[in-house]
Length: 100
Image (cartoon, helix red, strand yellow):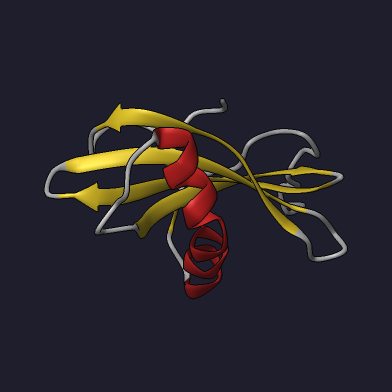
């Protein structure tokens, strides 16, 4: 049976956060805080999904406090440049990561 291929443009399965994802998140923290209008003492990647486009979109569930989460979208171009795209506030640990 052939291995299942990920569809380009589709959003992948949820995965546990990795050091690479935390590193990407750290690179956009100031941009996220500016967009949110607040500072986050905790900013820890919990889980993520990816979407392959002309680079990779990372949709990351981020713990920002006790029982408080946000979802952050980060774009990493194939050249290696990383940029903050958008975020969703007022999330819970149970909220699924979806395209935004």
